[in-house]
Every structure is written in structure tokens, then in C-alpha cells.
Amino acid sequence: MSLLVIDVGTSSVRASIVAPDATVTSIRQRDVLPTTPAPGFMELDAAALAAAVLATARDALAEHGAVDGVGITNQRATTIVWDRATGIPVGPGIGWQDQRTVMMCLALQAEGLRLSPSSSATKLAFLLDTADPDRERDLCFGTVDTWVAWTLSGGRLHVTDLSNAGVTGLMRLDGSGWDTDVLEALRIPPAVLPRIVDSSGAVGSAVALPGAPAIAGIAGDQQASLIGQGCTMPGMAKMTFGTGGMLDLCLGPERPAFEQRGPHGTFPIVAWRRHGRITWGLEAFMLTAGQAVEWLRDDLGIITDATESEALAAACTTTGDVWFVPALLGMATPAWDFGARGTLLGLTGGTGRAEVVRAVLEGVAHRGADLLEAAEADGAGTIPTLRVDGGMGANRVFLQALADACQRPVEVSPVLEATTLGAAFLAGMAMGVWAGEDEIAATWSPRLVVAPAAGTDRDRWREACDRARSWIPELSALNF
Image (cartoon, rainbow, N blue to C red; front, side):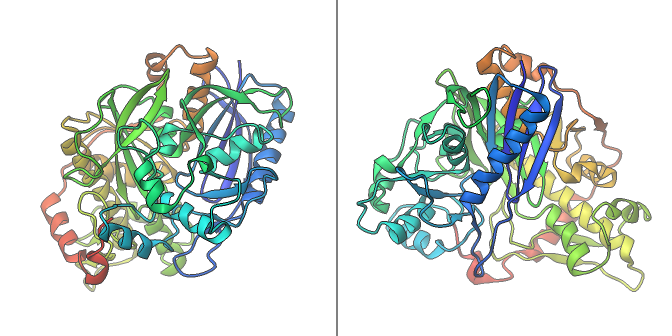
């Protein structure tokens, strides 16, 4: 019983076939690049995204043949609004990175309503204010998963799962439904909102595809990665190192006691919902991870390719007390500071390219340890091992630095993008391919395990972070 997975990232759409042994084949991918029409803006062409979804899915099915179910995973909080009758978007989709509603969030905060500009709530209000200021039109709102399900079902499904709904800023904190106070404050008609469904469970047919397979699994990308790396039991955690980095920890059926942000800078998330039962998690953020390597390549010209960073960093055994704080966009967990900036300390006349590259990799690794410590503190537990996916998971120097900074074994995902596997597992549990979370956990087989080899100077690291903080005080004062 094979499954088709649609995986929508920030810049591309990928369709893949996942077999019952969790192997991934028939991968088809198309770029759907966001645009930046103004500083702080990030937009996407929703119609082009829908076309890419159908094209990649049909290409994968043409090679493999019919499948029994479909899983969807996606970048979270990106916001799309379209006309219910025509299915035509009312304007560009607004990406999760878009910051155009910062002032709206600050104004709402002064009125006692705390929303983040990276969530969907104020993006939706902006789109409605632009396309339907009197709130008279019959429009649909959706995050990317909703738009994909609408596309695959030929407009028959207007749904989202709880893992995606939970990061829109529109949900009640206990996950029980849409928050009417937020809807009223932003003048959002309830009819605009999708129906909330389980992350694992058949919700309708993908009639736009050959054989009309059941859409049976939906999850945000980080939650899908958590499941895809077999972290389905309480206390298990994964970290994804892409442009930024996110650590997700599985907690179980009990929601954390804090409302929105924990004392150590983590956030409660719905990991998934199955049979109506919520599995909760915690999420910790770093705003800069792989972007720091891209900075070395694209802006400084120290390396010509991201893969070159491994060999160059390995050319020296230490950084020579050079420290890099990867805060190119500010710092997030554990102490959120949008005014922090990237900092390179300890340079001498003997510092060369190798030491700088190694310092960048070690700096990202130390930020990973920061996230681990914060998740353990807010989650009141110990994370025995850390599972890793994302592009930096191919860099052995970085992986060793991460294991050393965390003082934990690091287990590397057999596939760098575990989101596809997670969406397949959710759909497969609904279709009977896998019996449940225990069986999913048993599928985990890391490609590589990296054990800690030496300790690192975490006090020196914290001193470097102190130097990076509050560089732009006006931005440091912002708190969402």
C-alpha cells in the first residue's frame, strides 16, 4: 500500500512515493520561488503553487502507478485567501517570513492582544482588508496545507489540521477551536476559516489525481519532521537545520502549563492529532543556521559551495578562540532579541579562512545546544539523544561540533528531509499501513550516530552571545 506525499517548502514543491518499508522513490520537484516586492515583504504566487502541486504529483504517479493515500506537509503560517466560487486567489499569498504587519501586531499588543507577525492572523486580516474591506464576499482562508487539499480535491475540501491551525494565531490555546476574541478583533468572519481535522485520518478524495486516492495525512513541516524521525514518544526530540533551525520535542497528551512562551523561550505546539486526541510538543527556534554558511559563500566569498565548508573547517583543529554568534536576523530561543546581530570575535593576524568557517559551524552548533537546554528546561525533562535532519546534517564537522556542544549523541536522519516521511506516516496510520505511533517509532534507523568527543567552553559561548545582544536597541525592545 503506497502513499503519495506532497511536500511544500518555502521555495519548492516536491512529490514523492513512500512505500510500506518507508523508502522514498519517484521524487519530482519544481521550484516555486517567493518574491520580495519590498523590504520585509515575502509573497508567493498561489496559482503557480497549485499548478506545481498537480504537475509534480501527476509526474510521480505516472512513474509509480496508483497509490492508496495522500499525505500533505507544508511551510507553516503562510497565508492564502481565495474566492470560494471561482477558486481564484484574491491576491498574492503572504509568506510566513513576511513582516508587513509588525505595526498592526504592536497596536494590537497595546490593546491586550498578543500576536506575532510571523503567524497567519494579521496576514489574513491584511488580505481581507485589501480584498474585502466590508467583509461581504464569500472567501476562503487557508495555510498552504489547506490550499493544497483544496487543489487536490477540486475545491471540495476546505480543511486544515490542528498542527497547522495551532500556529495561525487564531486558535484557542488548548487547541479546542478557533478563538472568537481574536476573530472579532481582526474582523475575520468565521465562514472564511477551514474545518479543523485530525492530522491522521481520511478527509476526502484527491479527485484531481488518477485514482482519486484519499487525502489521509496533513501536518506542518516541523511536526512532520518530528514524526518522520520516529519521535512519537514523550521525551524524544529532533532538530532541523535548514536556513534557520528548529528543535521540536514530543511531550505527550498534556499541554505545557505556560500560555504562549515558556520561561526559556520555547513555544507549545500541537505535534499532531489522531482519533481526536492531541499529542503536544515544544518548539525552540534559531533564526540563523544554514543561512550563516550561505553568508560565507554568497556575501564574503570565503567558500564557493556550501559543501566546501566541511573540508575547509576540517583543515584546522580549533578556531584559535575565534567565536561566531549566528544572529544575522536576531536571536530567538532562549532569549528573544530581534536587535541582536551576528558577531565575530577573537580575530588575530593568524586567523584564516579555515578558522572563520570552523567558527561559523561551531557557532550554529552552540545555538543548537542553546535550544536543547531551553527545551529540557521548559519541558521539565532530559533529552537523551538528538535526532537531526536538514541540509547541515551532511556536514561531519558540524555534526561533531553539535554533539560536543550538546554533550549528547547526535543521530542523523536516513533522509535529510524527514518531512516527507512524517506526512507518509500520518497518512499511512489512517490507511492501515502502520498500526500506530509505537510502530512508527520502531522504523527509526539513523544513517549515522555521532558521539560527543570533547567538551566545549559554554561559558565562553555565553559571553560571546552577550556581546551580540541589543546591538539595535529599538528592535531589541520588540516582544511578540
